[in-house]
Structures are given as structure tokens and as C-alpha cells.
Image 1 (cartoon, helix red, strand yellow):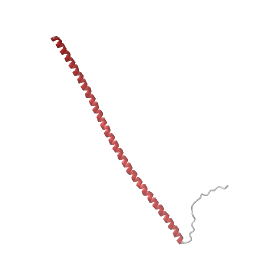
Image 2: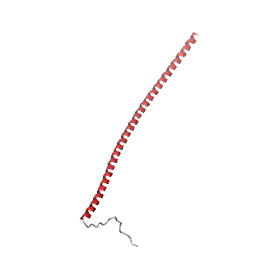
Image 3: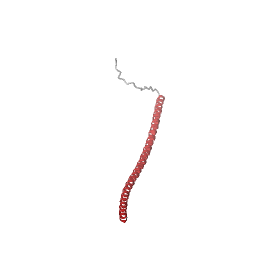
Image 4: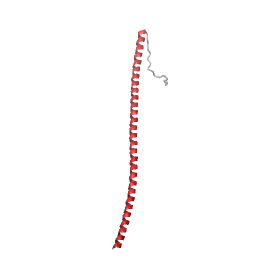
Length: 122
């Protein structure tokens, strides 16, 4: 068995005999370069369009995140305000409850005094 060291290539040997044959070959090569160039231009345009779309998407996403963060901060501020309001209301209720208890105690004391006075009058 022999080892094959040669790589298969797709090179074609061109046998050019005249100037016109050379011109045809060169025109063929030029056409292929033109096709490659057009393909490259199309790919380049597609790449630029994709970059522009990604930039727009990034900008839109950043704006959306800013909007969401601003909304969250607004909610946070409102929650903080409501917590403070609740705290103040609780303080007022405690204060009113103390005042109510004080008034009840005063009324009870007045009623005791009235009973004592009634007892003395009877």
C-alpha cells in the first residue's frame, strides 16, 4: 500500500496559445472578481444595516429601561410618602386614644364627685 501525500486540488491548467485566448481568460477572471466584489458589497451593506438596527435596538432598550426605572423610582417615592402618612396617622390615633382615655377618666371622676354630692344631699 502506498500512502497518498498529494492533496487534491482543483487547479486547472490553462493552455493559452493566442492573445485572444488570454484576453478571454482575463475577462473571465475579471467577471469572477466582479461577482466577488458585488457579493462583498452586498454582505457589507447587510452588515451595516444590521449594525444600524442593533444600535437602534440598543437605544430603544436603554430608553425603555430608563422609563421603567423612572416609574419604579416614582412608585418608591409614593410608597415612602404613604408609609410616612400611615406613621403620622398612627401617631394621631394614639394621641387621640390617650386624650379619649384622659377624658373618660375625667368624666368618671366627675361622675364619682356627683354621686358623692348626691349622697350628701340625700
